[in-house]
Image 1: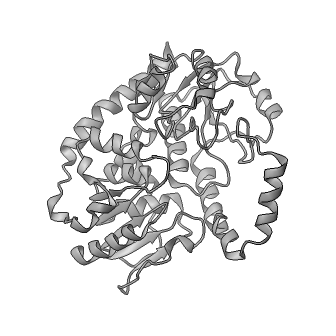
Image 2 (image 1 turned 180 degrees about the vertical axis):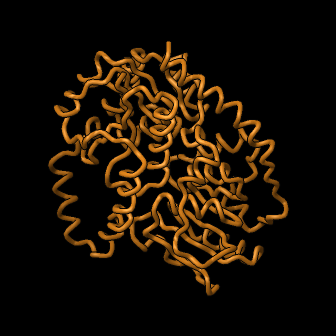
Length: 382
């Protein structure tokens, strides 16, 4: 049986969560079903089926405006080439990928017996609008058995104009599973009532397997706070200074991979403080695994903090659209809602007030993990 996994991975990614969830689902399926031919569908990052079309006039204005931007502003939006290369090396070593697919015609030539879509925000209505590929609505998918694994919308809204098309696509699925419980109600609002809640694919692998993948980077710090913020705000950086004083730890700050402008205002106060940009996924895992404390606004950084039994705080992202629900969903369901920090509460944070009871946390996540594995097995064997 030939199985293809459709997700948000592409060869230019510098997103740790993106590549590690891609690895996790790919590895888990191959390890559990070794007699099947399983690969992740390697879509090029310009493969823009379903994205909103930009009018010629709007595109022209953007192009002209871009000519007047400072070189630093342009570079700040470009991923670090060194980080891109290190991510590609990780993927080539650890993930079984199809050949890179550039066009709809190339995708339609692929023939899979089974297609799985997920995880990550594959059904995001912000980034992709209605993406026919991510809902497995392309010619080459017509004869395949389809199911989703831990698919995410990223927020709690489906635009009215997309509801009918999404329902029409999903009624053809053998099974639907989602990463957030809130997505079950969201799908119910469009008449899809059989969706089930499963864990993020990174939780399908245990701490031992992830430790095998992790690699120590070239750093000297032994006791440190790991700070990984996708959209750092002043209050978050102020909180980091506060936590350094409480713990006596140095800080290792890993950037989001899009230039150094995001770390303006970060105060390096200790000799061993470091700002790292060209970090490979396996090194990022090691940094989480060995941190005294993790401070993040990243869903997957939070997940790996739990896998490696680290102390952590999750900081609210201050975006216009509420994309914090996936983190809140996990924290509340594991009894850790108090680890979600708002700006107005940040000055009152005292680490001694928090409890990280991983025996209780793993009991709660363990039930969901087993249910998730049962869902996959049902999809693969029935």
